[in-house]
Length: 556
Image 1 (cartoon, rainbow, N blue to C red):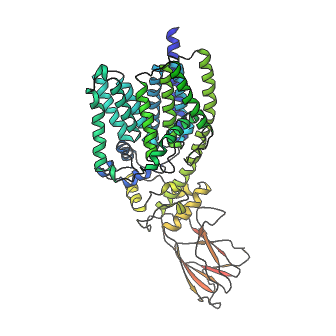
Image 2: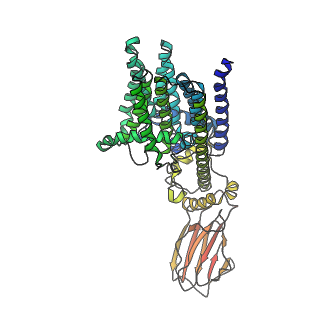
Image 3: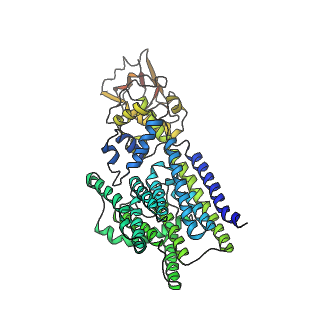
């Protein structure tokens, strides 16, 4: 019976992990590459030291680059499912190691309750649904593995810890926090094991410094005296954000900007107050408290020192670490105080977790909807680039005003065409584009108009009433009875009678609107519209002329 009681949390964790994996795979299955990953796919195409080691912003992400490039080389660029499956596995490993670490401190049931939050952490939905954020998940998983390896207190554990620390740092800057954690662990254990084990920290640190000297220093940094002075406030906000997020109370915007929940400061004050009260009641901290404290404090301080707008402690990308660290700190403090939750306390905790999972799952769903919209725009915009590839210039770029989203700013035509030639494209085919959602078709038309590009040249005063119209011309009366005229590739002549300026606009894949606005045609003018041929001749353009006088559209 005692064995069953001990084993039940492990079984329930396995079931929860399986359920989380299914949920994340279902939510992510039809998504595609988003935002920063395009910088890796397009700007780091060669397999050379520069591609692998150049900083992303100011971060070392060498192992992430290897993973991204390797998966694309094997499976192609048609979709990001391999990347998504790798990320899901990483999240499960992180949660599993997190659970094992907590179980050793507070028991299986309390560890299970805390790990359920990490598995379904919707407040940090970007980490769960955006595979590029392995920049956070992989360092955390490797870092937790490193701490558990150090607990072996043998040479094999030390070697494994050093390897995992290198992996953690090589996946992202969060790994640096675990470097401090390892150092704290070695220093605290010096009386029993000495300082000879500092090599565990020195080797990864030397490798990082060597990288920084060669590549990392070229990145833009934001260390300022003001940021240093504001760092205590940032740490306080990080603690509050951690507790608010795990309870589903932070509610950050889907854009990833800082949340504005009033719960954070109150929860931070309460948590710090309880920690102080606990120390007054029973002074002393366990040896394993200090590595977690070093990891958490260094994470918040490093983020504070390098702060710029968008990197608030309450932003979506940071609350995963915020939440995980406050739960780890709480477990260490409970363990220090000798607190083991009884049955009644565990039931209360289960109710709290159940109530917290509701908002977290709701936010996870909202994040999925946001990425679903971004996926449609990404597939539509890149599909439009595929259609326009004959005439698209290498310097053409999917800027926000063209693409309808700021998430594709790294997609430049020359690099994109090179990657597509090697690995395929995630873009819609013309047939898929024709049946896509209206926002995708709208922005695909805009992208096509700029990528081909469409162009007009007007000749004011060239209109000749005696020669107006002809066998290949369609009359467009001012009453709107002819709303549009199909236009073929090549030259189209637009004759506008005397009067005010005619407004010219076009559509192709979209319906019910004309998202492409051309330069106006003056009254009494003849305007030549040029439509380059492309890869979707079966889908014509449609020209809309709005004027107070009669006009003619002459094709052929």
